[in-house]
Image 1 (cartoon, rainbow, N blue to C red):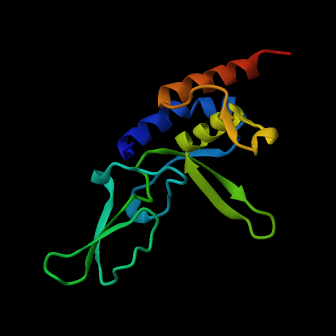
Image 2 (image 1 turned 180 degrees about the vertical axis):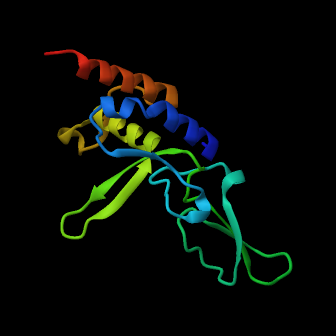
Length: 158
């Protein structure tokens, strides 16, 4: 997945999230130069979008960071997945915590994907607590179809 795909999937997931009971505030991400918005739990594997820079240390600091020696022999060149979404990506956020509440945010796609995967996962205590998916959720299309089915179930009066 790349940042452009994440933005498009978030736009498609935005109307489904309130139907599934998520009451957090939806808003659009600002330009990443401000550094205000963060992707959350989504890992962007398209290396075209990874942040690049130079470091004097050879140790990897961030998760999924890749380092190699610089060709000129001065330090290291690093690449790391992006932390910030594209401008305009739809996000959800709310205050969380009790004694010291903090702002918590993620993309709408990440929120929808976690709600759907939790709904369609069965935890078997007799099988060492290993999770079993009750429905195929391997592609974004599968996740969106499952979310629509969940919304239809919730809309039907009991």
